[in-house]
Structures are given as structure tokens and as C-alpha cells.
Amino acid sequence: MRTAVVDIGTNSTRLLVADVDRASGAVEELHRESQVTRLGDRVDAGGRLSEEAIKRVFATLAHYRATIDRFDCEANLAVLTSAVRDASNGAEFTKRVRSEFGLDARVLSGDEEAQLTFLGAMSDRDGSSNEPTVVIDIGGGSTEFIVGAEHTASFHVSVQAGVLRMSERHIHTDPPSPHELQDLAADTRTIFLGGLPPEQCSSVTRGIAVAGTATSAAAIDQELNPYDPERVHGYPLLLATVELLIARLADMTEARRRQVVGLHPDRAPTIVAGMILLDEAMKAFDLDHVEVSEHDILRGGALRLAGMG
Image (cartoon, rainbow, N blue to C red; front, side, top):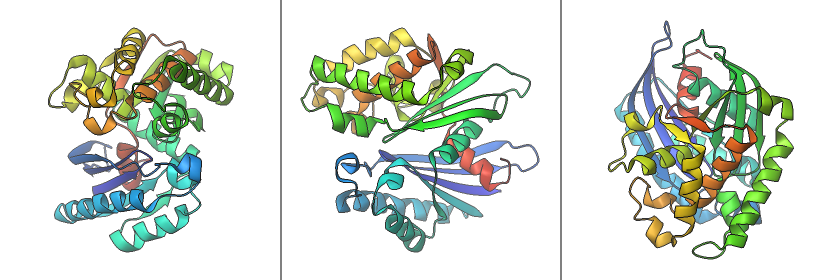
């Protein structure tokens, strides 16, 4: 079954076109694309999606719609997450996505987002493995933690800390000051630990990190130019490496971060917050490393469309 999944997130808008074998659950990715659109720009402060942000997303969706048509997809799904959940005009935005672009747009709850992410991240795992695993999905407005084994999630939570939200809340100088970094880390730690029961944290022995912060960290550490998803997927990212990246990137201006090999320039404004979020997430579960995965909510959505999850 040929599927198209669009992830309209707080910081980026992404597309996956894939063929899913309904018998085996095998996924063949035909096309993947991502644009940093910052839909959640100032939502944390103002409570609404701005017209400028909506225009950026709609321009990207027009391009994606043409791509979906070109691939002759049988079914599509557009998942809308933290920024749209939080915005007072989120329902109106969702209606426009449906009517103007012909996408099956659904606002996911934090729990639904977590379940689809876990489905995608664990889709290519050996089902015989029962190692307790946390999937960490750091987004623009929120972070999802999903704990489970094999292909079944037993715990999931969405907490209100993401790269765009925390950057807007704490980083006001360029480069960020030590005080701003300390406050961002402390706020993140409080939010994470407030949403994570200690027994869930202590039960986990393996971590998988998905989405832009983790994949950017893997690409920067390997100095990938151009970006190579095959070298990013499965990359072991050490906690010590994340802490070195925080120190390195936080010491740069945004203009200098835009020149860093392996980092997409559009992620330069939020990557410092992202690395701090990843650092605190790994510490919350006492992980000395995580495995970076290219398989996330997009793949989970494709499997769901094909009736596989």
C-alpha cells in the first residue's frame, strides 16, 4: 500500500512517502523531505499560531501535495502535534489543512503521538528482544518519552518542553549566557522529572532517540556533508558527546552555528536548547548513550495507515 504521511510539528514540517507491505509490515521509503517552518513560533507566549508561521507551513504543504500526487498515493495522513494542540486557533488551522490540501489532518494527543512514535522506532526491531527501552522524541513544543519492550509500549508521557518553546523561554542573548543555559537546563530537568515516574526511569536499560535534535547530533559528530541517513540511523551517541556538543555550540553565535558541518542552518537557532533537552533526557534515565533512529512518527503513521498498528 502506498502511503503519504505529513508531520506538521512545532519546528518542522516533514513528509514521508512509503510503500507498506501489509503481510510483513516491511516499509520501503520512496521519498522523505523536511522543512523547518517554525509553526510554533511565539505560541508559548501568545497562545496563537501566527499568520507568518501559517504561511510558511502552507507553502511547504503545497509543495508536499504535489509530491503526494506525483507518487499516486492510496492514502494520506497529516499529524499535527504540540503547537496546534496548544494554540487557540489550532482547530481552524487544522480545518484549513484538510480543505485546502486534501490531507487527512488529525490533531494528536500527546499519548497518540507517543504511540505512533514508538510504533515507528521499534518497527525494524527483532520482536524477540525484550530489553526495556525508552524512545525519546524531542520536538519543537514538547518531548515524548515512550517506555516498552519488543513492539509494545507500556508507558508514555508528553511533557511541555521542546526546542522552540525552551529557546523562546530562556535564550535571549547571542551566544547564550551561562545563566540562560543553566536556567534552561534546570527548567527542563524539573519538567522531565515531574512527568517521569522514578520506577519507569529505573526500569530502562536502552535508549533510542528520534527526530531532529538527535539526528543533528549524530550528523555533527560524524561531520556529515551532505547528510547521510544511512550513517545516522543506528548511530551510538554518547552522553559525553552530547555534553561536548553543548559546550561547543553554546559558545558560538547563531551565525557561526549555521556554518557547522552536519547541522542544517535552519536548526541553528534551536540546536543548543535541543542538546540540553537531550542531555537531561539521557540523565533522567541514567543512559550513557542512545541509539539514534531515523524511524519515528512518520514511519509509525505509514504503518497505521496500512493497518499495521
